[in-house]
Image (tube, rainbow, N blue to C red):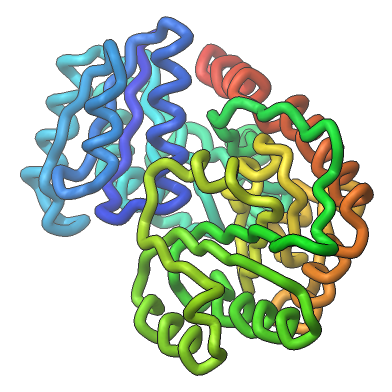
Length: 345
């Protein structure tokens, strides 16, 4: 198939990573892929490295920009796509009408709760969770216009450890990944780490991510006396490297619509601590992770202590999580659903 993927966001977070992974996965299966990105987006660097992919860029000055709209339409027309998939609202708003004018079926991955006025031209909406699907239906979207398909991770599953690590006398290596914004809860994570250390737990924490809360989090690290315990790496493209060095993955979000980083930790066979936000609760359960209430730093502290105290049970949950990943969130498991959707349009 000839498949166009469009992402017009300028930042690089979970949605942008999903876009890049989709381009890579479709290309690896022999499909002709056109990737259209905002020229100033970091996603451009990644898609241009994908062998055999056609990459085009546009400068988008705003959703009103007629020049960007015409350029997108022209790229789609020249490529002669069988289907177009948009990621996030701006892509749907700007590329949806172009696809409709050209008679090309369109798909939009919603990624979160969305304002439907931006998606009026889209043939099919793809929520990634049941709650997103329920939301779309509550807004009057017909059932035949909705196809729920989860996110996936392209990280290859890592063989589980033959023996669980004994952390009673060592240092627990903990990793957190994500944008440094309030809703991701890294301030709660730091407070949890400080409390666990006061209770005698030895920890070394790595946080990979960037964002507007960076300065405030570094000040909090200093105030909590964690400068020798917690390392901020900034944004990292190769999350697999840091997951492979860790003993535990923590997702402390106050709100998390899905959590692709959870999938990456599952594939890496890491014990997981996550909050009971709506994304993680659709991916994980008590058999595959330790779940705590959002906003509860004490709960995070107790979860860290529990993993250190019960390494064998932690390893068992990690193996169960990886098996769940392979069956439901691997490239092959999810891509087959998209291809079936495309062919049915």
